[in-house]
Length: 125
Image (cartoon, rainbow, N blue to C red):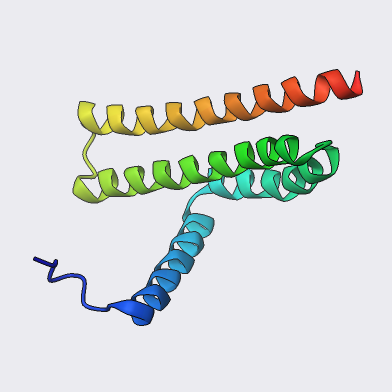
């Protein structure tokens, strides 16, 4: 049985999905300072990773870790928006959800830093 909230199928569904994704990027840009900062970092790091990587695997790792940071930040922002929508009151579970999302972003930033260091230090020092 299909969901009553999913009306479009085929090409129309794909077109709608791109529109929702565009709206998501716009909302993240407008409402999330951390996303804007990480996107600006990505604008520098992705070209740098493509230039500094010495083969396809290195380039994929350098660029991929930066994209993972953006993905996790988007998911963290979505969790925060849902928590804020459910209740504006302070609650231990709301704090826990937001803190866990923040921790996930921190882990991906540490992963990116470690991958960049492990690839670049042997090549350039």
